[in-house]
Amino acid sequence: MEWIIITLASMFAGFVDAVVGGGGLILVPALFGAFPSAPPATLLGTNKSAGVWGTLISARQYAKRVDMRWAAIAPAAGAGFAASLLGAWAVTVVDPSMLRKALPLILIAVLAYTLYKKQLGQTHAPRYSGRTEAWVASAIGATIGFYDGFFGPGTGSFFVFLMVRWLGYDFLNASASAKILNIATNVAALILFTAKGHVWWHFAIPLAAANILGSMLGTWMALKKGSGFVRGMFIIVVAALILKTGYDAFLR
Image (tube, rainbow, N blue to C red; front, side, top):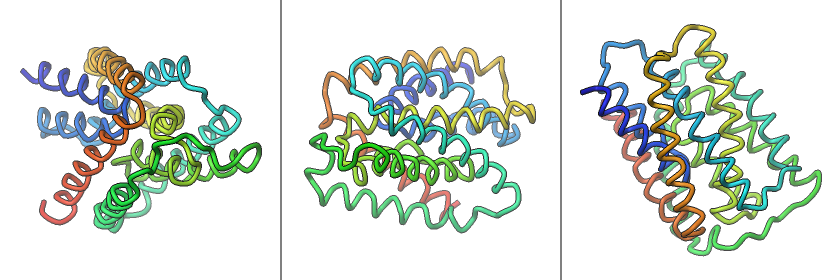
């Protein structure tokens, strides 16, 4: 029964993650619910081992249809990879409990701003070019990459929001670019989890296959429906993250 639950969860997580990020919001609780006595690091590592493949396929599909700004995204991905490793190390020496309580409040601010700015991310009008865009994108990659290694929930959504807000991308282009950065941060975390033996590979393979299927469907929907659809999904995912992180921080 656990196989069916987590496989379906992985497929849905792939769909959501492909559109706007936040797939961990679905698969991680499913894994913890199915295997309550398992080491948390092993469940998190298994989640990363499945999700990284769906993100990779999604990024490939987006790259075929969206004009990716590689001169900015490539260095940002490198910064995200390095910062994610640093964040993963930092969580071994620093207690993230304060961030756990601050996260719902940050997400509320993100949601309120998105709802208030109704035209936010509707048009693709990059604010920077050349080295300036690369530096700003790298700052986003490093900041959220560190967060992903250190704590993690909502990483994809934070990438999307900051690319829309700071770089002037529309939601579709931001989501496409965020996949590249997310691959880098996920691979960094997966390297650490694998090195420490925190991946159930017998689960990772079927979960990865389901995640890829969901990711392909989500990418197709996002490309077909455009920025309006991605924005709507962004609002839903951030609202769900507020409820989940708020419960974890203050009620559990």
